[in-house]
Image (cartoon, protein in one colour):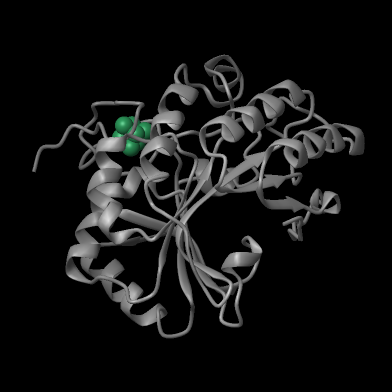
Length: 282
Ligand code: SF4
């Protein structure tokens, strides 16, 4: 079957049965890592069983500071047909409370085919960069329970600097508008449906973080926001240092003034071997 890939805003127009585009992946789901009982997501997603974290190989954004660059750039992992992936979901849902699809965007069509074979009985978290097409998300929406979405940059210029794309904010803001239609539903203090907006604070880019906070406060004032401090320079990143306590404090102060719900990641999370901790402010 001929197919020209326009799944994400890169619009590579390659036939992914034969070639790869910017995401570096063919048309078959590839997974680099699966972790059961993963307990490193936000507190409202953590219960005794934890989440089944599925790390998809490849990435359609490839930020130069990516903490998972071996997965996002390396063409590593095991391939699954839609049927095999549906079977994996059937098997894993017994032991976990959520599915956490990490960087799934470039496999959207194949994941949709798997959902049509088997619809999971536990909530599905769509954990992405927000560099996506709303038209594709509309098709997935009936199967996704929770959007866990980054808002990395508040203007396109910063996206061009670090993520090699000219339209990050244009696309991500539309994606957030669409996904915010999913209202938050809690059961036993756990989020079972809804939206969490994540923002990783970058060293030297505090103005960007303040703009992100202001944008969220203006447009999504009652949503859960997760502010993260975990940035650690990698050999490939153009930013060569960690965040300073003062930089993080400035962003935290703005968030506390303007936002209503959410989490701050513990500053000490910026370790080489990242073990995130979250401090609940509200
Ligand atoms: S999913 Fe991959 S190949 Fe398709 S448009 Fe996006 S980056 Fe290009």
